[in-house]
Image (cartoon, rainbow, N blue to C red; front, side, top):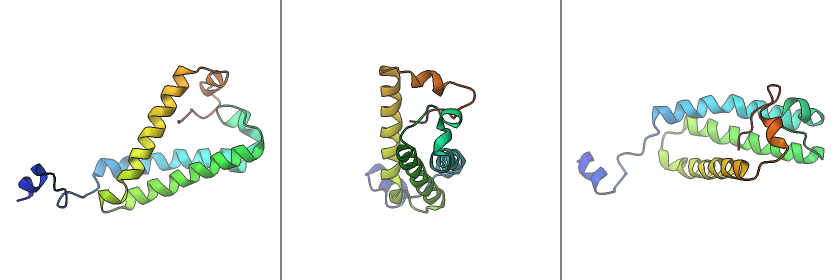
Length: 125
């Protein structure tokens, strides 16, 4: 019966969050927390700690708050029991990351060198 439901497009019986999705969510959280800490708490040190210098400081804080939103999402994803609760968020992150990567490589700028610095965090999107 489950096989027939899966083939017919009815995903009611297959709404579980995969183990790999949970692990990915758990692995991503510390990186997002680090980016939040750098951008929100140490706004005056983004040149040394992040990929590039961000001015004004409020811009850094808003970007840091966005990373904190990512922490919230991925913690909820790691704890979710149903895929349909989190699927839209994963699609949004996919579009943001792929789009950001394409733009990053299509329009090189001076921040690209800073992003590859061994002293800064890697550009994540």
